[in-house]
Image 1 (cartoon, rainbow, N blue to C red):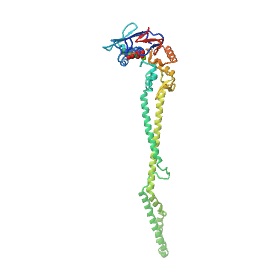
Image 2: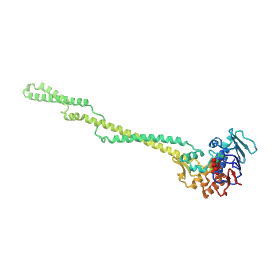
Image 3: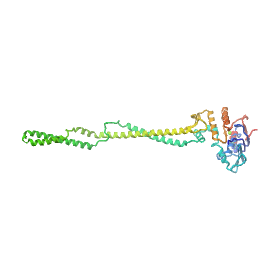
Image 4: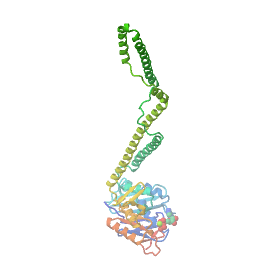
Length: 405
Ligand SMILES: Nc1ncnc2c1ncn2[C@@H]1O[C@H](COP(=O)(O)OP(=O)(O)O)[C@@H](O)[C@H]1O
Ligand SMILES: [Mg+2]
């Protein structure tokens, strides 16, 4: 069911005394001088249809000095009559074509009128953020843009933290001397080296004693020729024992190591720390890369989802900064493009009640008016346009709350 306004009657609504308008064609001009009641005509249509929101916006719907106001709309398959009275909240009657009254009239109307009583020019003046909200309300998004943005920001913030740690660790690493492959992995023990040295020293002492004894014995050999046989066996034993021992060992390296051991161990510790920092750096870099991938995945998810959404106008989409048209910010589209898009959006938002209103018609040049007329004809919409006009030759001319005859 597609509805348009076939007839509008309004009495005492705002500036209006009594008007009776039967429009023809897809574009309905409401003309006249300032403050004669043009906006009141357009408001009367929306006030009759919309419930709470429209009535709250108009504090005094009844013309000054009157007790009641009434607006009747003939929508073809449906007739709407709303009455405002001074003393109560007023009445709303919605009748089907056969005259039967609906029992929940406002609910019936709520289903007819779009998510917003759409004024296309109002869309072009909305903030970038509100334009996105308007656009999103006309399509089925497979994701919640706010939630996705929160998720993206969470990952982004975490990556920023990690990157900060990466920079810190890199700075720390730069402060260490470069790696020395000749250093042992673990610190050396003073006690171990002392023990080793002691063994070597004992060996040397015994070696010295043994050689001294050998010399003495060899000297005695000449004198003690007669004792040679028994002494020879002693000697043999002694030589065998001497064979078990190492050659004399140089003690200087031990002393040198001992002299340097603290400095060396300090370098070893430093090198161990360096290895730990390098490994943490590698891990953090890996984490940062993972977060970068996660961010890219979110962007891709969003891009894929957006690519799949069917916007009411081809080329229309949105990004973080607002609505875009053919990839360019909507505010940078030409005036004609903005108008076409806004009208198409308004049509998409009001698929059943095919009535749009433009309050600032005086801002439109003839090309824009032609564009709107063409769109209205093509999609079978009725566009009510308010135009300030002093010639008295444009559309229904409103004068002092009435249609000038
Ligand atoms: N309830 C009312 N009773 C009497 N006059 C009203 C009422 N509401 C608004 N007006 C007057 O109507 C005029 C504005 O009407 P409007 O329909 O906006 O005119 P237009 O769009 O032709 O400029 C103002 O002068 C305002 O004071
Ligand atoms: Mg006006």
